[in-house]
Image (cartoon, rainbow, N blue to C red; front, top):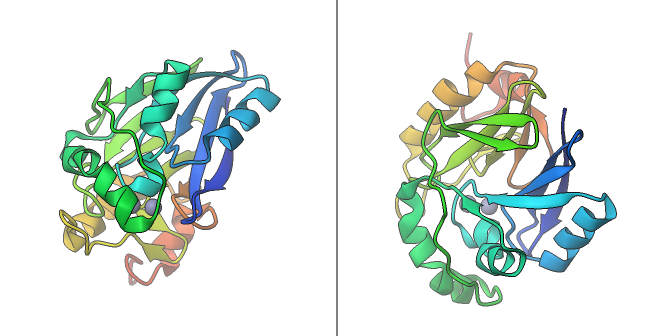
Length: 213
Ligand SMILES: [Zn+2]
Ligand SMILES: [Zn+2]
C-alpha cells in the first residue's frame, strides 16, 4: 500500500509529501520546495530509499529544492507538464522575488501529461493535467489508497490563485470538476498548503466549486 508523510517547508509552508511503497520502501518526494536536510532526515529515519522527484508545478515553493536535490542524490525529475517550462526558466527570478535561497535550475527527465502513470515500488499513481493555477500543473492520484496529491489546484475551502502569468480561472474550475471530482467523494486530497480534506466535502461546500443542488 502507498504510505506518505507531509512536511510543510519554506516560508510558504508548502506541503512537501514523501510517498513510499511499504513493501519495497522505495520513495518519491513530491514538490521539494526547500529545507532539503529536513526532507532527507525524514527519509532516512524511516529507512526509505529515495528514487525520484515528482513535481506538480514549478512555482518556487514547490520546485525550489529540485535542482539541488536531484544533483546531490542522483534522482530523476518527473513532471510537471511542459506548460510550466517558463516557470522553470524563471526560477532564479522567483527566488529573488520571494526572498528564497537561489534555486538551481533543472531539466525534467520526464515531462508528464494527462493519463500518464508514475510508479514507486509496487504502487502506481495516475497523472491528471489540471491547468489553471499554472498551465503545466499536474496532480498524482492513487486510486488504491484513495489519495490525491493536488498541489495548488484545490485547498480545503479554497482553490489555487489564477492571477499569475499563465493562470486561468475557468480552466482551473473545469479541471477540478472534470479531473478531481471523478476520483470520488471519499478520496482524501493533500493540498499544497493547509490541511487535507475529502473531495466530497469540497464538492459540497467549497465556495468556488461546490455543486449547487
Ligand atoms: Zn503554486
Ligand atoms: Zn504553492
